Image 1 (spheres, rainbow, N blue to C red):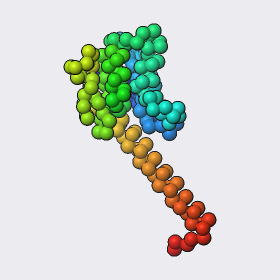
Image 2: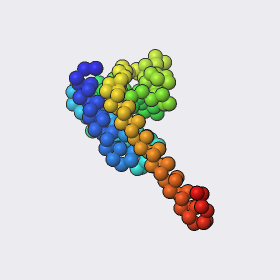
Image 3: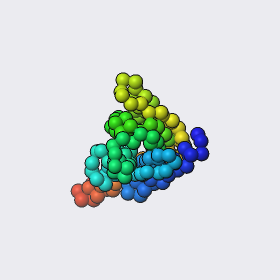
Image 4: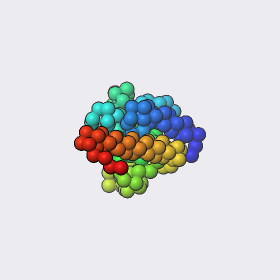
Length: 173
């Protein structure tokens, strides 16, 4: 990992933390061209109730708007979690040259874990992929988020059960 990769991944982590503040899955993305941050974004799927508002897609959309083109040649995408199939497709179609990600995604990762869409020679564009940049920090953020989510769900379930017991007069002692 070089210092630039760590610097940009820290920015992506800061974006992920913004998502976490909104109770979104904490994933952040940053697009850089020639050492300049062009765009950044974080997951908004729960907020928007829209399946396509992943951090990568939002960052790509902002970059295209800022640059006035759909071709992001020369761009590097830094993202805290390995891109899914949808995001990998958008990365290829927008002609991003390099993807740097933190944590692997064993359930949906398409930049090397389940498959590597980004380096598939059958497509007319391929990306350089660098994995594991600040992997521990990125993975820890996601793990702690899901651990807390499970804890809150369990607490709500227990409260609902207690409320039902109270309403029905059931004493489970």
